[in-house]
Image 1 (cartoon, rainbow, N blue to C red):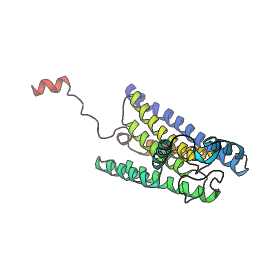
Image 2 (tube, one colour):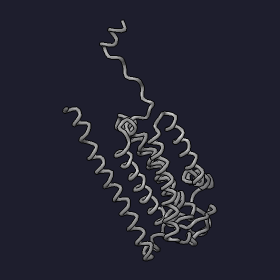
Image 3 (tube, helix red, strand yellow):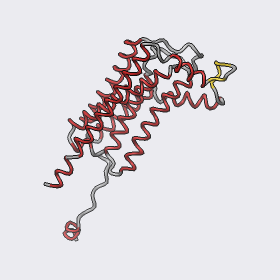
Image 4 (cartoon, rainbow, N blue to C red):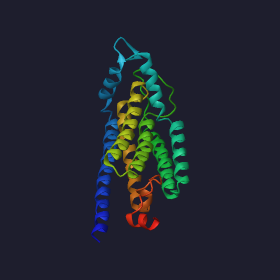
Length: 248
């Protein structure tokens, strides 16, 4: 009975922490969106973008050519094409290991993330930066950054799923940290390439993180325990002494 209580008690606390993080992300987005609507971020946005360009030539990003190419490679990690491939691969993997409910929730998370990104872009309809030349082609509105939002949704969701399958805190921290780092790098690359205002990226990170955490909470509440806490890849438990003696 005591062991059962130990297993049950941490879950509400973890869900409470996740709910607080989700609320913080949503609050962060609302605050940034409010500042953008009142045009209070103009000075901040312009200062950051200009700091990433050569002082005597705003068409030239700071740093060597190879760094510019690296920024384009990193920004591709947040593109719809790459995120689609990553999502399809994840869905197939989850189906193969028998986690159909998890795969369904991940699919809903990804699709709703795309809908959220496009809906917010249409709602705010902010123009792309015209302060510096763009280093890439852009097709949609600027606010919030779709690359930042969707990379946060997809990578944080993947990181959370993988972390839940690992018993060691160090491994969990590494997986979550890596997913956060990927989302941050994608957002920073959008600034470096001049295709987003800094406030776009901040809003994208906030909304994407809140959305990913919301779906993690949903998974923890509605998925069976074995689907949220095992990956299907764990090693078989070693035989007990009793089993060993019987086999002998």
